Image (tube, rainbow, N blue to C red; front, side, top):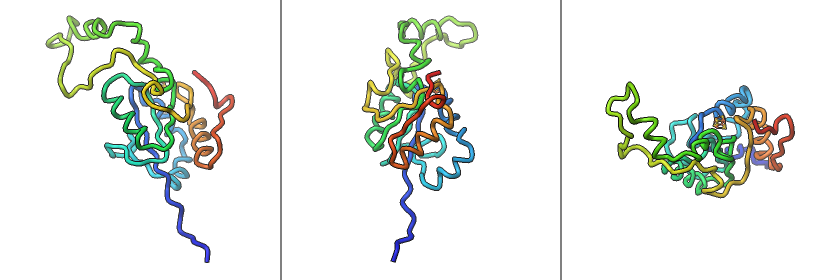
Length: 184
Ligand code: SF4
């Protein structure tokens, strides 16, 4: 007798580190394919769920680079729990726009932003212990953990993300070619 029980769904987690959520918006741009996707995957930690910590997953998608101590913690948690880790977008791959601050002195930068500016109440750099500690530089995620795949673009298109995921889930080596593969 053939076993008709459905295959267990793949678990997929997503997060944004130092990013703008544009890559997540692109993910949502796969539109009606989302309905196909939720037939075969289940979301773990993601802005699309209210799950706070990443559990054991098949695929982790990371948007954004690493700019503070909390980003490092979340990224390591994803790497420890996700069988396949994917860097999505320019910020995760090379630091992107947030890394523009890397040629500036962080202390001077904070002074410029917070001290002596009109409209700021106490004119000092915020130092609440709840705030994650900033790193001197913004790092691409592969400088912190091993990364299995990279999807370039700022953001990559919804079609590119869909093609990449369906290749991966289908057991094929993910392959993007122009115009899906682009770096802007
Ligand atoms: Fe936003 Fe572009 Fe960075 Fe994605 S790659 S998080 S769209 S700035």
